[in-house]
Length: 228
Ligand SMILES: Cc1ncc(C[n+]2csc(CCOP(=O)(O)OP(=O)(O)O)c2C)c(N)n1
Ligand SMILES: [Mg+2]
Image 1 (tube, rainbow, N blue to C red):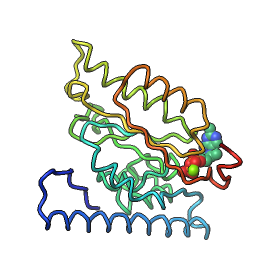
Image 2 (image 1 turned 90 degrees about the vertical axis):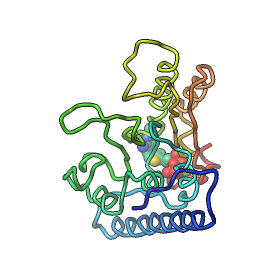
Image 3 (image 1 turned 135 degrees about the vertical axis):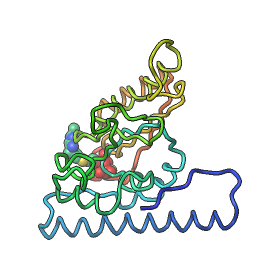
Image 4 (image 1 turned 120 degrees about the vertical axis):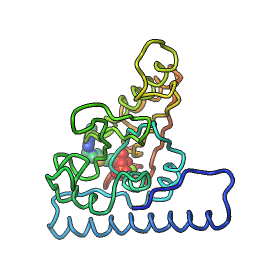
């Protein structure tokens, strides 16, 4: 899968055209994965699946602003974003859906998590730390909706600590606190206390955090007028 080029200020028409076409290809590929994946679930070939269709374009935009060293703490609709940062391809997406237990084929969790729960690896095979400043990072999604919120706050708070506290070995973990923690959540899940507490704390602590709420007016099958 094509990685999105970083956002350049001076860009030629040809480069611009190439980037637009790459984005379009990625959005269509991700949409087709959703449609085919859902068909696999509804025909009984995969047990359960949840997909990111309808949310492709803003995730492509988000991926362009997301830099090496940044961290995502998000939820199960983010497949296009993960594809755009080069952390998920079509085969891996379906390996997750079928709960393939081979870590090579299903690098998110070797089939132990539900499909659509996205992660990058922070450790090398020998257990040593990777340099997290040289990769785009995603903490592993967890199933309770809004559970990603306190961790999002913690990731943002870590950058603030790295910036203001001397004497921490930060080489592989921080560039003087310049990283950003990016959160995603669905509209229905914003009803949860964890969401409000995190937004409040982020304001009080003044931490580098960006929050995206994907408002599709539904919480699964329940319309927002009954829920929010
Ligand atoms: C704490 C908790 N309660 C209930 C659920 C079951 N559940 C999974 S997704 C979902 C709806 C979420 O809707 P929303 O946040 O709007 O996200 P969307 O899927 O619409 O993008 C619910 C109730 C859960 N996973 N965790
Ligand atoms: Mg919703």
